[in-house]
Image 1 (cartoon, rainbow, N blue to C red):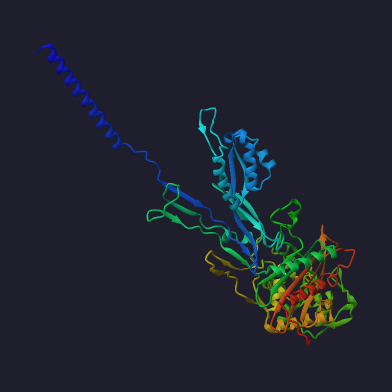
Image 2 (tube, rainbow, N blue to C red):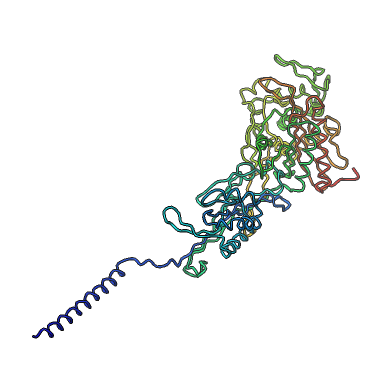
Length: 589
């Protein structure tokens, strides 16, 4: 073999070796791709839309409280071209309605800056369009940080949570309540703290966010098909109150006016539908705006109609009277000695405003005799006394659908075994009740002896407008129908002939009882008072309402007696119920 042939053979061998190496590399590449996971582009997309808290409506259909989504706008200051920052500020201010000075101040920070957390849905949509416009105008530039990372971000507008809005400011407060903000892993949520917002927090809270997962299109939108995942958005239930907004606002104007006239600390009015537990109004002069709670509002955050207990004074007398009557321990026509208005019991004296030598037991109630009540209360044994007060709802919660209700306090059977406690409780001292307990107790008499659980929420409403009625405790008979009617007739006489005469309204049947109670501070009674009038108003068409008025701490240097404070307001409330069509006047009466 000559050299030429040898070289030729060597070249052919080298060629085959190269082909063999190349083939091995080819096979190795195929094998590597088979055994390793391929990093393909992500063709999946996920979209989440947050559900929001349910709304609260009045009985007459007005929206009282609602939630709306809010968004935040974020920009990285390093990506804004310094030459075009003024343009950015001008356009962002025009689209967001945020003052230029506020934006300029925030842009002094470096890095990611939140320009606003409270952008509404409409403005958020506009700002997303603005981002496209700003990019087309080259407002944003790339930026390289100290680590050599290059990035370019535009204007980011993302959901930040929900905002609770109260459309009528302080109306229906503190019954409506307020919320607190809570941060979860993604957005800001809200939760009820007081009032209806608290007691129905679980029902108002959103059930589930909307979730869409599936193959994406070129615009990164989820394509819905049989392989995609879709979970519908379920907002919280709407809560429908039993209180009509129009009536509530007008009652609130009355309590505000009377608070100023009387120099009172607070005035509370409650209206309960007869023969049910439905509250038509629960108004206080101590209100606050939940959209902007201030430090000076803190004392007003509690609903004193249920969270404040006090010695009731003489408004307790019809309750004790009805207990005695139902147990056949008194006869209304029986005459008892009233000691000329001054009676010694144990080591203290009981006095009457109306100094009478004697009177019938019914007149004891008509003229609000402490002496008469103290004497007839001795006929109750201790166990019956305590149990009867409990049956009427004292010493326990009323069942109203509001949080943090106080239960007050009543003496136990041991204490009620003594003459003094039997006496003092009978005219409203030595026990503590709440406004709502007293309203419920009077409604028991007005409702023919049947006790109803009071409520301020009528029903729930879901997103498909399906109503869910709220379940309440079954009504309980406390007094016989006969006893209740006798006491009602006596309450009517209190207004026609007794201490409540200024409550009379022509063409409407009205009954009730006054009460003016000393306030104890530091273990002794001081020159401060709570005055009240509780009763009812009914017409000939079957409309009947239990009404309670309490004036807490009216000006003690002026007229502070209930007949001068609570009773005139009671009359104004009845006249308003007539004007608003809740009561129909009998013109022949």
